[in-house]
Image 1 (cartoon, rainbow, N blue to C red):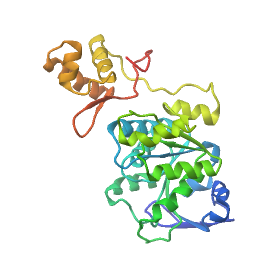
Image 2 (spheres, helix red, strand yellow; image 1 turned 90 degrees about the vertical axis):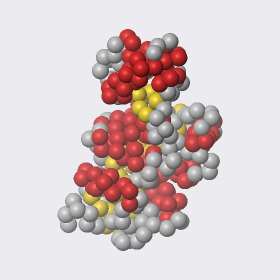
Image 3 (tube, rainbow, N blue to C red; image 1 turned 180 degrees about the horizontal axis):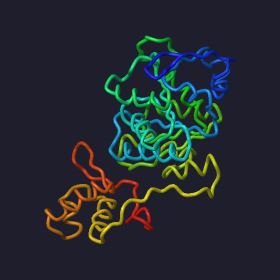
Length: 305
């Protein structure tokens, strides 16, 4: 059956096309899996080339940027990116994977043909073009509160490593991490500011022994071995003055006035430089208008300009 328009297909445990990684759930493995989209994305799934990315729905601009870059670079490197299509980190990881031209799988709490959250309808359609949306819930079933912790075990089983980008205490993302550990999968976490509530969970994971993940290269090193070609993304060349502004943002100057004070420059000059850096992709702004440094690096440069 064609699956390009959201029509549902299914596979049972023991049938061809059922992801072998789910069998590690043993008695808790789904008896049946339903999906929409590219069925071959499931049939050809290899555990060693699959990464699960999860995190907070109320994510910071820092977390959203990290999740999107992780998704994009890992997908471009040939890994399948798995997440739950929730608002925040999940959606950012999916969008990044799509931007990287790779394959991404969304695991839903309701039926695979039920878009949830409805605000991500466009993302749902985009995922179907090259990846798949899957669920153990029958078609047409609306998600319930208990559906999401249950679906987390599927996400944990599908990924050779689960990377938590941001998570408060407690959170569904930490449940996924614990389930991954129970399956003897690797768990990694993105460190965050100690003053941030949504970094409490990830920082605690690192203290408890999770792999510290600084970016996509760390994930590739752990899955495919150290020494593979670097994937850090370079941007266009930066003039010296713009590089100084980018460095000020990286050191914590998150507003135009703060940058102007840090560099001893007129506010109008700082505003123009920040606008140029945003267009070039070196800085991002959040909903409150605060600036943050992106992972983009200048050609031949280090992470810090």
